[in-house]
Length: 438
Image (cartoon, rainbow, N blue to C red; front, side, top):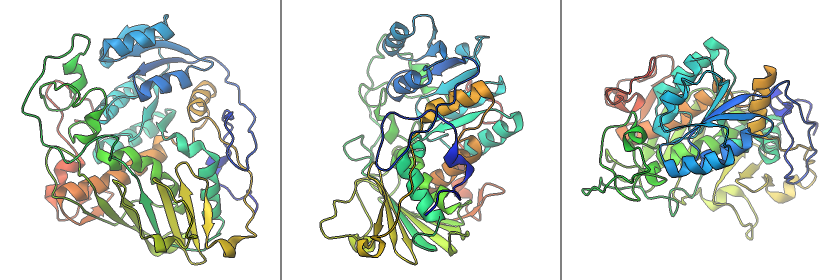
């Protein structure tokens, strides 16, 4: 099949990756017109790699982290950058053109909105926000101000996702009836199903705990429980396995099927608590149909190692499968898309003659920096990634409320379920309010 019918986002002139997977060609590098002055909020963990990626060909002029140990490491790498432990103070620096936000989930929206209000272009890690309301607000504000934005879902730039989306949109398996999406998180990566600790520990001298808490309710520091990583399992700070991996894994489903907001969302799992995400959860979304699907299409989310029935795949008995992946079930057959496995069509014998086109990886980060430098476009602007995040986070709303959600997207309401409102829009801690958010 020809690649001529692919949508605009699949032919962006980004920087070609040096890593090549499967049948690809290398895209020509688009050189920026000028160097961009970039500030990085959060420079440890994922923030470290984000900072290194966006620094290629550009200037890191400011760095921020609430952990002075992490900040010092970043300062050794970029000694000319000014150092901050407060992102609000960082944003007062006048020579900043663009900002990366690589913090725990609860700080994504306030830092991003504050940067955009100052006219800064932004790259924000997934999930774009902690709450559905925040996603809507960032999306609308970015569009109003015509800012160049990108959410950090780097898999979107890989050839394997482009191949999977292309196959679906070019009718390889016909109209899609349903899709299944699964992850092995949280599992051994972090714990969920937790109760709040009763103890408290001294705050390490290098950690600015109040700044780390930010918009979240105040609570004591506990060693190894929140900072630097296990915050993901706590509702005050993270969005659980669904928020962490859903933006990656649901991306090719939303993209390939061109889905809008879901109509209904329901969830099953252990009884919800006010403190922590579930040990496991299954979420069921129903979407209005599109030209790629039947009249409606169901998408099912599984986590903690749960997966759809193996018989659904129509794969060979010795097929290895994947710990994280997507299965599209269509009229003519099935398409599997793995993370990190390349796409496959099942049953094998039916698609022996299918010709995969050639695609290349491109650099998701440098796509953004080049767009900032040249007034260009990105593949995951908030116009796309905001609604994607809303859809993902609605699974948490359904799980936490214990209700089947009939979603009124226009009004951002769970019809007839006021108990869900608190999970759609949270209340910020006093003194941490941000215009347009909370």
